[in-house]
Image 1 (cartoon, rainbow, N blue to C red):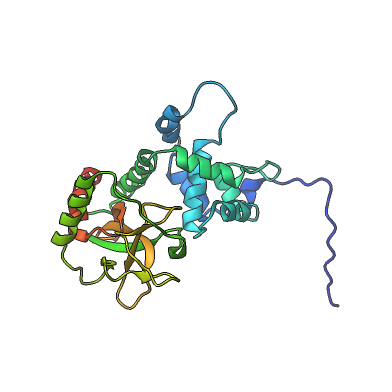
Image 2: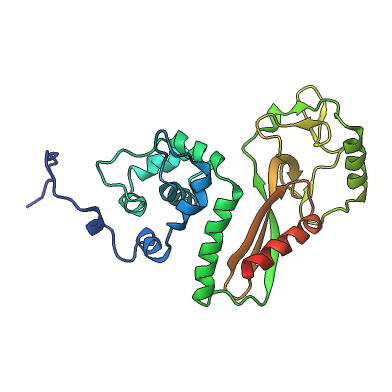
Length: 269
């Protein structure tokens, strides 16, 4: 006899969220392995003693982590995905009937926190990897990658006259001393993208009003984009990331290496 499922929504349901999350679920395991409570102390400086309560710092950081793991590239998508995922709800400690944070709250909180807060979380996770024997600390490999900025080349505007002539002189000196990179390179001053009026767009002549720190750069055989330069160090024993930093896309690996090594040594210590 053929079965036919009929659905009628119940008015009252006996439901416990923890019973629905398998023991080997990634987010359940993260809750068991990582103690996020240190974030309260690390973020205390950003809050006063009166007024409306903010989003819980632990909830915010867990949502940022879930967004990375699920490859969600906007705060709105993070919240929309959260509405459908029981395991992420359990991860952040929100029951089915609790109202979720607004996506704009995530944006404001991210702007509020400094780099220090995110770095401390990274170090905590790295320490767990060290304690589990996943990091040898003997040999590190460092490489760079372009990270596309959230900005359009078509929106770039001409730069105004530099306020200080010394800055211009220093910029010229640095550009003359730079050597060509074999794999990735910033766009040279005379090889920028043409706009609709035939005007050459380069890092020296134009900037992005929505993201002034983004720089024109390209890889051989790839289109020119507004990017950042990400530098990542990994332990060669098990490929655990031991250090990561972001730089301007017109910087070269040799310019980034000194600060990368300083931070890498501090992390491993």
